Length: 168
Image (cartoon, rainbow, N blue to C red; front, side):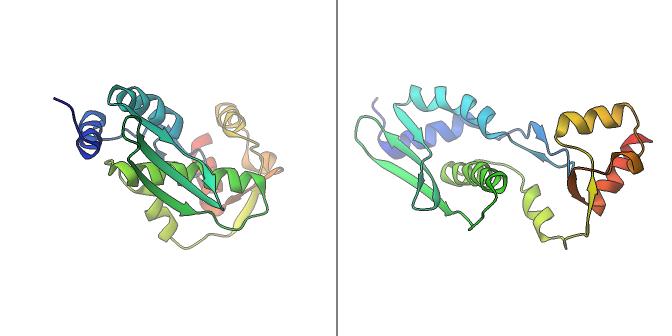
């Protein structure tokens, strides 16, 4: 039996099931699903049903689109990127928007930890040495005192406290 476009999307949703949050944000200690892991899991299922995922950035927006390779039918979801001048923040926004446009597009099941974090008031930032998550992990493993690691990066008071707890 040949499926129409909507039936193919429904079959993909059924096969993918709930998304497992497989990554941890080292700064906020919350879990999220990694976009690359999701796409690696999703692409074989899409291809099995003759569907193609594309995620271009068009006119300042991240667009997720699933297209039927036979009929050309498509469904899209998009979010306009914020105006930012920092390449790292732009990259983070793109990754975040790719995850959420794709989640929305397929109505994938995932908890919304990020929305909870975004609704909390912003804490005062303090500088802390941790250039990346590897450095964070090494500093924690070596139990380097927070007073010695303050140097390169800005973190919230909450993250500084989390670091202090992690080294105890």
